[in-house]
Length: 215
Image (cartoon, rainbow, N blue to C red; front, side, top):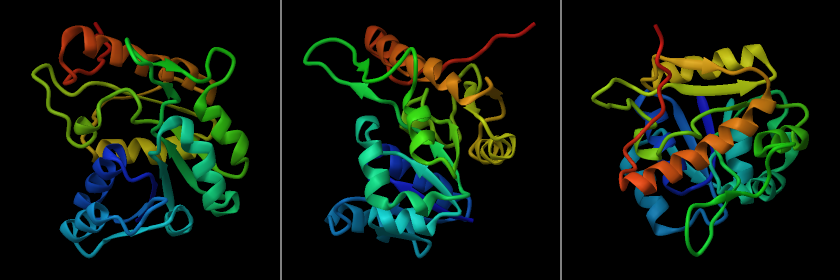
């Protein structure tokens, strides 16, 4: 499978490395594809990894993953070209976080909408699924915790797209994927990301994840 990633930071590179480990082809899209650190990443990742523009990544991917800063996602999509996402599964791994000088971050949007819903409005012909947004990037691929892997939450309007993303998550090492319903569920998942940050800051430990206990 060909995977286009919009973004070039830790989140994007971690996801890209995971897809590559599973044998997929990856195009990392960025505003500055000539940066030396990105060339180093591509060279170290092997022949199936390339770096290009946002437009390159969106056109390349059969599945496209949004891994930009949450507040920059809309601009990145518009730069890539909305039509390049048509008909594709789009995984939104972003959170529209607003960082403060002190204390935990807040959300730029919430309660009556979410970052993922805004993405779907911008991409009406794409099939947007929220995933990967409630855990730190170092645990995206084959997460290992003493209590077992955390749960991964997803939401979206298209059942087929969610099945595709669930298959990707299982391959990434997430045995428990919880579908919370339509894309309006991203309002809670993006708030959950804020709770994740607050909890990690209070514990002084970012190696944490959420798990639903059952009986």
